[in-house]
Length: 375
View 1: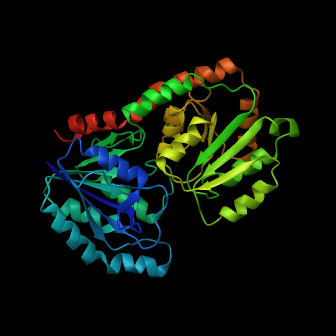
View 2: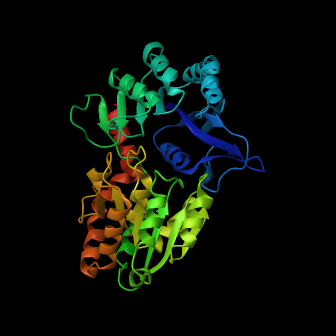
View 3: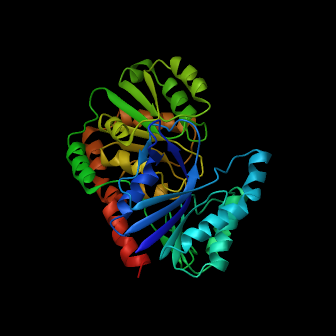
């Protein structure tokens, strides 16, 4: 059985000519080879140096088919999105003639014309994957349009979270990020974690204000000197155009911050292993960030925003700390709670997380695809 995946996943060529792409998506596709014989991935090939988080495909049973690298906020970028539409659709149509199923991953810029093409012109079975915030009240116009189109067609749509008035074709689906081996390793490590003594914090994601990076630095800067002494280090993994601004703020915080930039999946997991707390006070358009489940797997207590589907998995003081108000002051209060937290409560929260992280395994995801989508 052959599958075509259509996405905006960024791909690059390394100096030795190896094709690599955004790590989480590439890992998911590699694992999907347990379900499909061949996977054609229609996505974007970019120029420039590949980030450390990029990974190669593990098999030649994944066939990469490039479309023009499109997207951006400028008027020129938006015009190119439309100008290149015929070429993008022609490439997609050619791939669809070679497969049995398709999966479209949105929201993404090309979705405004690829979704209607798939709905109106393609007869082959397929499904849509909406990775954003399905319940977002004021999404960007393009996202709003794509969500509307997915709601008003008959094919399956996998979404983050469970919502009132959810259309029948919309299945609540966790995005996979953990192997069975990593689950076993994480369970063993989590049992050994303690919150006594010095504490290590971490964040993984884009270095942007809306993702909560500035709130993290400001909240920690506002702690008392005695509280700051409890913090061994704060790891920030990722990159963004405001990185230097955040570095400047962190230098004045009185707490050691390490800005790692992009890291490989293995190196990110090493950060989780030596951290007790994961911070993500985000206000961005999130579905359920995979990094939360990854961090929880290795015994990190998550301090996260109660937005989109996040609050459906992170129950306050049961599986983590869920911020009702995403402000610097509320985050500071949460960090102070952790610094004063009873060791037994911390360990109980970490134990409670196991039932959540199991939902995010590749094995669980593949089983659901075989029993709930390809039937």
